Length: 103
Image (cartoon, rainbow, N blue to C red):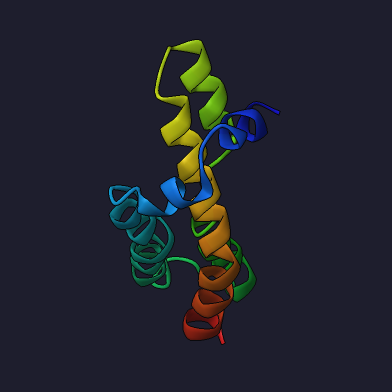
């Protein structure tokens, strides 16, 4: 509810104009899973476990971020924007990563 209420106050165009979210999203959802794959493929022999690790590392930002921002007086609007953008991007990035790295 906290995410929805904070996103309701932000114009949708403003969410996409937040330029500092894009490098973070790229690193979080593409670079980190690729690095995990390149490192862990030498140690994890079970392909299912490796696939689970890659998929979990490519997941969007956790919603608990909003709770922490609320508790410690952080930037709730920025956290909401980040959750929204990473969730939206994960619809594309997770299947692409699975296809490229695991199939």
